[in-house]
Length: 605
Image (cartoon, rainbow, N blue to C red; front, side, top):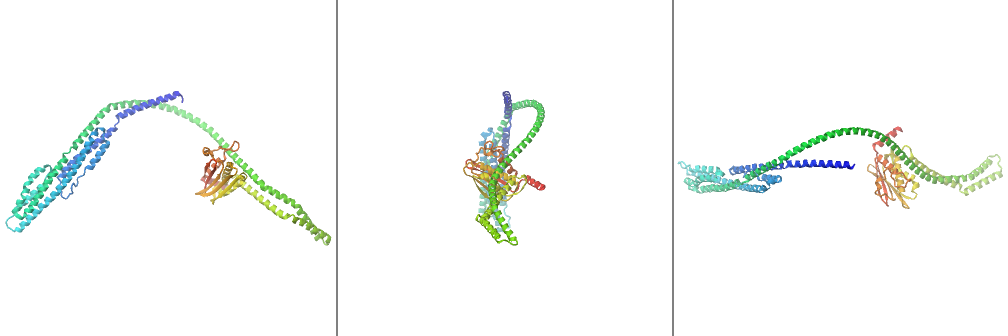
């Protein structure tokens, strides 16, 4: 990028940042996020005011509720818990303008909650006192009725006591908390007249009347205490504080709206200017896109032409790669044939020596055969001469004696046995060489990897002269694969391991074992090892650590590709100076592609 273009981009970025900064500034000046908080606070204050009003109504209803069948404060909700939740909610969402009001509000609600509890306790005592007064009045009424029955007089009973009892009972139930003092003054006279009225009926009713009088006055006393608790609850000023807080918060919101009015106008004007600018830029972008479309079409045409050229180059590259792979295979085959030829020379030499020695023994056997033929001819004549017969017999006996003395037959037996053993070794080498080098390399069949390991070691025997080979063949299942390709992988791994030996006497360990769903082949050596920085590259095509001219870098790459095509994997672990271990894992059943090759091979067969 040129310096001028870089400067233009920097200026454009600064301008865009400045425009964005101005927009963000105006947005925050006109943002209404704090209004949400204030609106939520106003709503919470409204709920608190409603709660306070309902609480006052509940207090009045509670104080005047004497349903004797209902429990104390039954049917009246306890507003304390809700007031605490609303205050907690207001504390979390309260704006700064309410900070000074939060303490008095919370203290007032707590005080009102305590007053409500005191009123409930006092009303409960009033209900108990009323129940006791009712009981004593009923006891007096029952005693008076019994006294009249005992008198058995024909004169009518005085009606003053029943009237007084009804007046007292009605006065007790109509004892309104708001006019407790007036109600007490009105009911004092009927209560005081209870004892005289009862004495007019029967002097023995004095105690019952006194108890009724005492119960009624105890209720009035407790009712007076409840009135004090009710007034303490009613006179609390939480409602006025809530009203003042709502009014102050509403005023703050109104002032904030007035302050943000001009900034909203600025924001609208600025947004309009940005809209005009963006419209202009959009038109420029549309024009640039049209030009870009034309450039893209031209570029696509060029890309198509270049792709065609690259496809041709790719085909040529694949052909070159195939040729290089074939070269590597032929190179491996050449090294393998050279090693096999060396291995064939040894048994072939003693087969040749055995045949030559046997050939040297043939004249003696031929001479003995001739002597035997002469003796046979003399014996077959009609009149054999005794002297000729004796001479022929002596000559054959001498010849056979020399053959026995020289152990000709024992030598021939040993020579033929050695010759047959050498021929069998040559036959095994040729058979393994044919398995490794057969042309149907894509043929898929059942294969035991233990046989492949043994064959690879036999083929590579010439390069294992100075290496101690140790094998651990496990009981492995047969796998479906291309045997020739798996053999090539094993031979490549063995060859690489031998070439990595840097000790006077190397050690090569090959082991096989069964695994879940397949087999594992491990080739371990105690060679020079592989450095950590080189280890990730060993399977790359054409990568080699050998000297120039001694390797193509395709051996491990081909092995990796073959194992991958069979659905397996190769894992490598190495420590410089200690050695390396290549672990090949092959599945029992290859991928579907390899199965299809097997079916095609069977159809062609």
